[in-house]
Amino acid sequence: MTRKIHLIAAARPNFMKIAPIWRAMTENSTVLEPVLIHTGQHYDKNMSDVFFEDLGLPKPDVHLGIGGGTHAHQVAGVMLKYEELCLADRPDLVLVVGDVNATMATSLVATKLHIPVAHVEAGLRSRDRTMPEEINRLVTDAIADLLFTPSPDADANLRSEGVPDHKIKLVGNIMIDSLVRTISRARELEVFTRYGLEDGGYGVVTLHRPSNVDDPATLEAILRVLAGVGMPLLFPVHPRTRAVMEKHDLVTRCGLADSDLKFIEPLGYYEFMNLVAHCRLMLTDSGGLQEETTYLKIPCLTLRPNTERPITIEQGTNELATVESLPGQVERILAGQWKEGTVPDLWDGKTAPRIVRELEEYLAGRPA
Ligand code: UD1
Image (cartoon, rainbow, N blue to C red; front, side):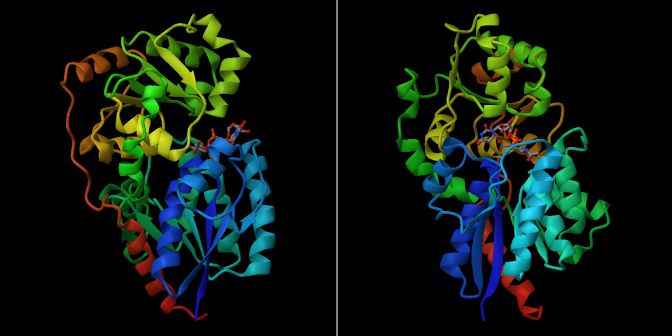
């Protein structure tokens, strides 16, 4: 007897987490039948479709078509549409990943319909409730039935919040599964040469957190510092960031047209990972890139006051940074004075099969 699993994908960082789970269910399980659901939060070709192609995912079975908007608009829109789907389709379990709005919205819907929820990447905490993702993590973890964690610090966070041990499953880092599968092909591309850059001779920038990009004065201060770090930087610009840059004409205002800071369109998974694999350093506010650079042993500066992924600092190649600290940190990297880091346990490319085994065991103990 097969058991129907809804896999929820909404925004760019979800796709590389869902892909290995979909594949492990499709290839290695005779019990679990995945149904791929895209809520529509990210909708541009280069924010969504290209990742499905690069990661070998089929077209979603269902597309809810809930695009951008305020948080309430996105969460309410997904809840209304997803409730209809759940009532019609009755999955045996709903699997959500990460910390985006749809992660929380679909978990709420499923839990209220008494459908079990599994959360992959559970237990991460920045302890910064001004981040929308922290609210999504807290709510999702409070109601999910199975909590798949990437590292022991996440287990400790959940235990301190009173989550019973039997719900917590340390399975490793799902994002690394996608990276392990694709990195050798990604390395072979020569995307960086397209921009006139040399292997190891440039840095990569990504910024999209509301706290860094929504206020034009904050974004301007960051861009000015980046342009002056003394090495070429490639910056694939997220639509949220581009909107603020264009509205306030920041490239002209900051005189960046001929600077070392080159703005490009967002790239697909392979092309982007080619840039990352060959760069000298990463400057980011992304969650996933802190992990990917730790795996690749590339120095990473995270432009945030905190991180929900402290293991990337304690064991990996990551440091937090501010506009003030950044130039000195870049100097240390260029002088070869950066930590080498180690790859945390279970960040080994085999997290998805571990999740599939746990799900099979969990569902075997429940009536169909
Ligand atoms: C969302 C997630 C964030 C994640 C990020 C990855 C939440 C709360 N935030 O933030 O955790 O790190 O995705 O990118 O869920 N837009 C486009 N085209 C697209 C996607 C977005 O133009 O394909 C525009 C939206 O219309 C909106 C802005 O970009 O104006 C922000 O998009 P949104 O999905 O609300 O949040 P992100 O900043 O992408």
